[in-house]
Amino acid sequence: MSILELTGENFDDMTASGAVLVDFWAAWCGPCKMQSPIVDAFADKHEDVKVCKVNVDEQPGLAARFEIMSIPTLMVFRDGALSGKTVGLSSLEEIEELCK
Image (tube, rainbow, N blue to C red; front, side, top):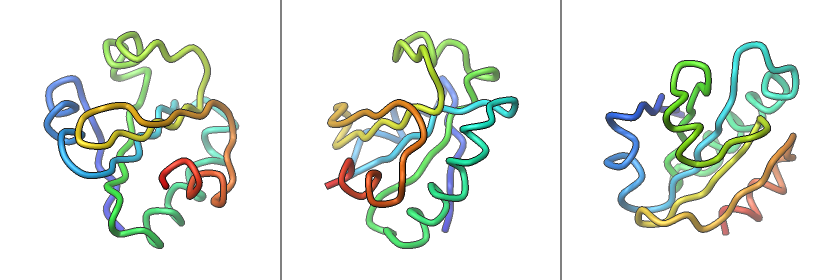
């Protein structure tokens, strides 16, 4: 499992090809702390999907670009285009369905 940290500088390159799950989170967010091990489990189980995280406190430009109003927010990109989004704590099964 390799989860990548995304920044304003590498976001577009990292989401340009294939399926990419992006977790928008913050260190102070309780539900984000609960979401993290579920995202990790998804990454372990699904090597065909690139899994990335964006710390909204460290990357406010990305949070603004994608209109992140609540966290955790999970977004799925396919070949650079947004294909799915969920806000709030998601189960492994819900994440798998989002990434189908």
